[in-house]
Image 1 (cartoon, rainbow, N blue to C red):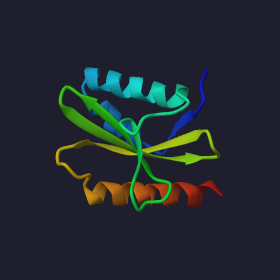
Image 2 (spheres, one colour):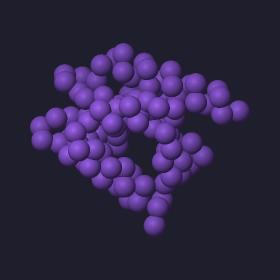
Image 3 (cartoon, one colour):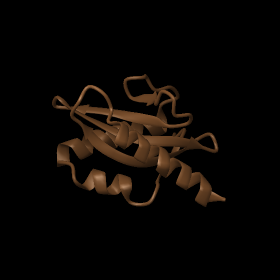
Amino acid sequence: MAKREIRFYKNYFNEFYIAQSEKVRRKIAQTLVWLQTLERLPITILKSIEGKRGLYEIRIEFGGDIFRVFCCFDEGALVILFNGFQKKTQKTPLAEIEKAEKLMKEYFKNKY
């Protein structure tokens, strides 16, 4: 039984998803199923972005590669997915966080 509903904001997530290999897409899809169905998610899968209220990153690892998808929660059990990227450095690039924060603000502004 789904505990959360996932929605995509515009085409940002879809563009990221389509650009990945079949195996990576399967891992992303599995992670999203966990996000939908598990009551609690470990910090290794879902982590809040420090200093960015309401912004989270979904953490995906596959074959030594690391991927991140930004998201936020709306109305409790609704998860809105924003941009995703392949992480190549230890720290999450500030430009990616700023893009996600901008998309989150745009989402909430356009919602009302």
